[in-house]
Length: 129
Image (cartoon, rainbow, N blue to C red; front, top):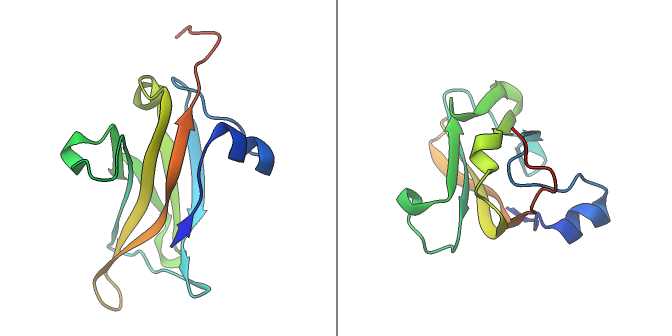
């Protein structure tokens, strides 16, 4: 599992684009364990944003899953796409906790938390739709 805070400061320091509430985003991840790509064929994935780690999934600020914001782009190679629509991020102003979790079926069924940390969405200056 990797820990990476997705905040204005960390994104700016690493050269990534800052996140703004109400914007669209799409990220491609290659998921590996021990340097080997995970076979996600028939598996699942979730990207969850919450106020606190102890909040239930039902009370998440946002939870994306396969078919609803997450695409298993190349499952055999562990490649997924996580896409946030503007409507998903519109109310996410602030700093929250997140994780990216997968359920792998092959060779045995197991759930793996791939990343966790903080994610921050800033206010936009222009707020047109």
